[in-house]
Length: 334
Image 1: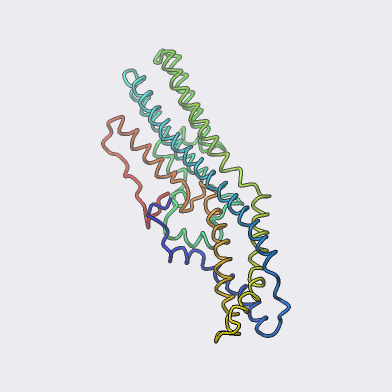
Image 2: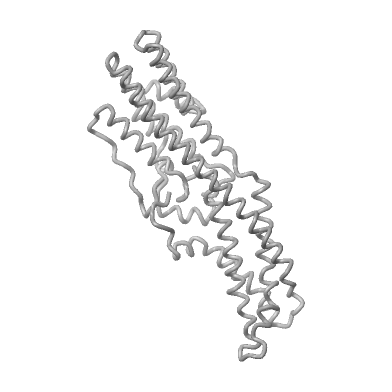
């Protein structure tokens, strides 16, 4: 998540510079051809304007959908924060007097669940963007924690060796950790350490965590529909290709009867670049938000949120050796 006031203009220009290079060349080619006498390459502006209207609608639709996915992802992790705090004090107050060590084990297993979940959500998918040059280059400004460490080493901090090996042998480790929590609660209830009301309360919290995990996995594993994404790309590409051809005559006429006659044609390059860059960048902004867990600077900061939850829950047990909060690096926090 970008935590600064805004992306700087220079930062934005650098991020989109590859598209600027390409768009400049695409604008220059028809301009040079027209200047050399190939007047027939000019096409009427009206159909291009109609195409631009369609592109504006579909790019706007994509950006709205992208923002909805991003906002839903943030709501899911907001729910995990609240549910974790509730789970912590309910569990502490129900079991601390009878089995404080068991409370600590279950707290640690919850930290392990948060860790396993964020590692699963950071796993790359074929439709995500972090592998492209534009995003990969920008990612050098910050660090994605899940790519710097191994899940084995992170889970080792919270689980016993036996449980660690058991969890690492499973495909969906976050799910199995929650299943282990449920088993612990059932055993505590069978021993009489929990009454009916306490058992119900704690189980309700575990169900909420399962729901939150499922919602996050749905966003992670179901991409923005490929049919919408593809048609947006194709229409945008057509618009970008045709804009420089449609502005040729209009800009050539601009200088008639003035000292600039014959030279206003070259305005086609900057004006076409400006128009096409706006549309292409709007599409890029939507694309940058459409996968909110992949690790881009526009994503939900799930690592920071997980650390915040751990600090809050350790505080509930009056632990003094709290892990440090995760702070932004170059205005980026993940």
